[in-house]
Image 1: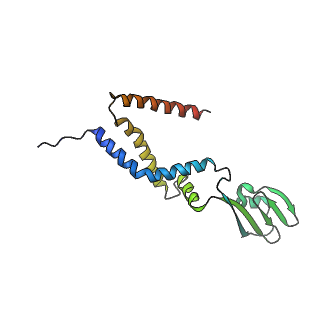
Image 2: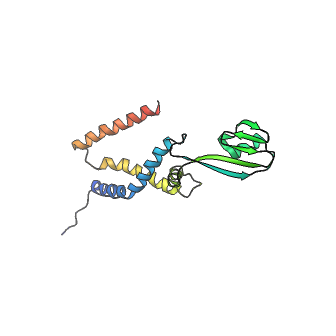
Image 3: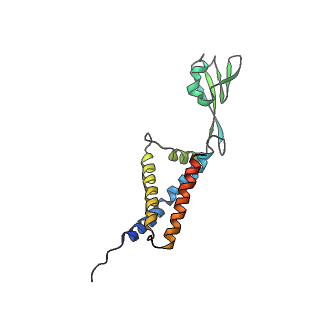
Length: 171
C-alpha cells in the first residue's frame, strides 16, 4: 500500500497545536509579567524594603546619586543627616538608610524574565519565545485553505488587528 503524503497545512496545524501547548506556561508568565510592567512606575503590589549601608563619611549629594538612584535629590537636612526622597544619609557616620519599593520575590523574577537582555542568560528564552510567536502568526494563515469562509473571516480579523495596532502606535 502506498504511503500518502501529509499536506503542509496539516503538518503546520500539528506543530502549531503542540508548540502552543508547550508554550502555554511561558505565555502565562509573560502575560502576567507584561500586565505587571504596565504598573512599574507605581507601587502596585510592591512593599517597602529598607537597607542600611555603611558609606564613606562626608559624601556630597552628587556622590550619593548612584547609590540612591532616582531618589538622590536632597529634600532637607537636619544637623549631619541629609534626607532624600528614598532614604537618609548621615554625613558624620556615613550610614545610609535606603528605601526601595520591591515586588514580591516570584513577581520580581517574572519581571526580570520579561526584561531580560543579552547580559542575562534568560535572553535565549526570550528569543525562542519571540520566534515561536512569529511562527504562530504565520502558521495561523496555513490553518485553513483560502477558499474556506473561516479563512476569509480570519483575514478581516487580521486586518482589524493591524489597523488597531497602527492606530494605537500613534495615539
